[in-house]
Amino acid sequence: MAGKSTKRATVRAPKSRELPVARPREPAAALIAKRIEEDIVLGRRQPRERLIEQDLCELFQTHRGDVRLALFELEKKGLVGRIPNRGALVRGLTPREVREIYAVREELEVMAISIIPLPVAAADIKRLEELQRRHSAAIAAGDLLTAFYSNLSFHQVMFGLCGNSCLIETIDLLAQKVYGIRSYANAVSGVLDRARQDHLDMIQALRNSQRKELVALARRHLLPAPEAYIKDYERRFGKADLETAS
Image (cartoon, rainbow, N blue to C red; front, side):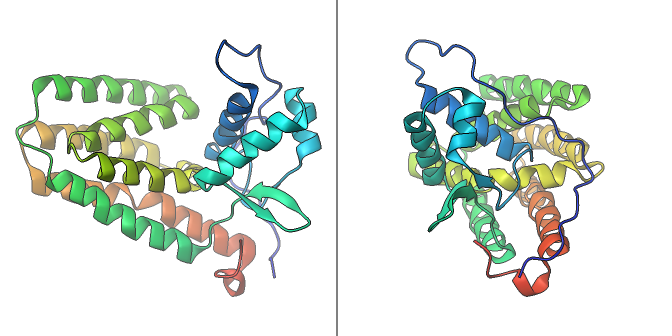
């Protein structure tokens, strides 16, 4: 049974508003899915929050067909779930699910780092530095959405250095499943600055071909989000509900 809800200690931006005019070849459903995904990433939409089709139609000024396609795409990514007779809702991962996903993520990311050919080309180091400058600037400006996308790009480029397309794809898929818990870490003081410093240290380890140091950084880098999410989950829903939510 769910416990009493408590508010997160963060100031949340308003949820996505209506769509702008769609660009050519960019279907409305894709834009809707992206906006809802960003709301989930930024914590504007909470785990177990219902996604009512009519409300979304009014919000995005579109019809149910586009909304349903958007929700279907988000369901495939693992961000949205469905409950019979209740419809779609933001997927609420249980602590057990979070631990299992992060255990696999850790092993796969360490595997990728272990097969990155060293030394890394100067052009690849430069690309990572460019992405990290964007990430640092976004953190300084309080632009959490740009910080999210630049962080995502940084890790995609870094793990992409391993050259194993199957491994890279699996890492990306698992990262998607936990988009909804990222905002929990951002609410903890110092976490964003620590993430920024981790990236800088990762670049330095790659530049110096320090694989052992890079592995240690990758393991540490994964810790804040699941720890913050599980702590908040226990506070909101109680320990008796930990492994039964959907």
